[in-house]
Amino acid sequence: MKTNILAFWRKNSQDMFRLTQFRLTALYSGMLMVFLTLFIVIVYSLLYIIITHDQERRVNSLADQERKAIEDILAQQTLLDFLDNQNVVFLSEDQFFFYVVNPRGELIMGDEVNRGVRPALLAALQEWTPNEKELKYIDVSLPSRQHEFSRFRSLELRLLAAARPIIVHNQLVGVLYVGMDTTTFSRLFKWLWMIFIGLAVLFIGVAVLLSHFMSKRALVPIQEAYNRQREFVANASHELRTPLSVIFSSVEALEMDEEVKVSEFSQKVMHRLREEVKRMTKLINDLLTLARSDSEHAFLEIVKEPFDFRPHAERTIQVLKELADKKDIHLHFDSPESVVGSGDADKLTQLLYILLDNAIKYTPNGGHVSLSLRVELYKQHQLLVISVKDTGIGIAPEDIGRIFDRFYRADKARTRQHGGHGLGLSIAKWIVDAHQGTIHVQSEVAKGTEFIVKIPF
Ligand code: ATP
Ligand code: MG
Image (cartoon, rainbow, N blue to C red; front, top):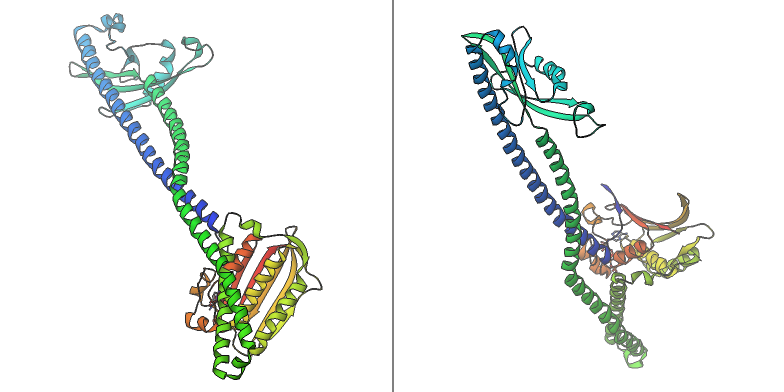
């Protein structure tokens, strides 16, 4: 199975803390927002339900009282009398109108607070065939001349209407419509809604700020502990370098010694000692590099200057040739005459060394390793493209995502025999990130692996 992976920016420690802080902020403020939204929705709904319910109850009781009053009047009077009595029936302060419409659709009795809306109201009511106790909201607008609030704007009214049949002497005389003015409430709710939204936005802003602040504070001790740890590793590695180099030169001096030279056993021990010291020196150097890469000033470690990469690559190949020859591995190199661009020459060479070293290490005897360099133009930027391809053991898909982790080795038994610590690719990744580049891996188990690095050059 062929696996392809795009390794994105590795999160260095700074990014990691920033990401954690961002996540914590999002979590805290998300929770606050949920509570706030719930609170607003519940309070608003409760208010709405209670007030609407109360209004409906009032308009219903108004309709019942009114119906009784009108039926009483009609029962006691002749039609002529009642025509004079049109204005008697206004029972409540917020009542806006009452109309009695006979079965033929003619208005036989009625009044309203404002005469101007009568045609609109009657038209709206005429369309309505109410069921028992059914209520209806009617929106009418009062032309500007007819109200005192504003001389230019028409006033929108929201009325709640109820209807009752008027029955006199067991005969249906007509339908009574009564309406209450609920404009104030509907306007109040509109305002309330806006106020709530405004408050919500304000509180959410405060919540985000507060969570940001709190998560920052929560991370301070962790960050401090992390920094101490990093400094400790950096200092320890640094301190270990001097004694190690002393040991190394002592071993070399001992190897020269005549007495050691004659004893096969001593030679063997010296050789093992020398290899282990070399291995340890590499480990210490790698640890130091990574500890530095974690620091806030990691960018200072990278010095970008214009240079030609080709000679560096040739030298690296030269250095590794011995290793390749030992395993009878063919090294191929493909590059233009010059690969000129800007970057940290030492770090990029180290990157190349790490990739080639792996390719040779993880390729069986007689295999092929090829390095290709080229410069590409991408969106008006120059990209250095490094490809290191081998015909080696390959990397299993489940390992590919982790090979850039520190101390991660895909096949522990096999890699121990190669003497690796699993730090090479972590350093490679850091170098790529520090150059704002990307690194891709393409691998097939038992067939081979290709690392493709793209770096703005
Ligand atoms: P170090 O580089 O520190 O000496 P290492 O080579 O084991 O040790 P990395 O270079 O970080 O560590 O590589 C991590 C792991 O990825 C290796 O142990 C190996 O399993 C796998 N790997 C890396 N490159 C290749 C490759 N070209 N082919 C197959 N496996 C590879
Ligand atoms: Mg390696």
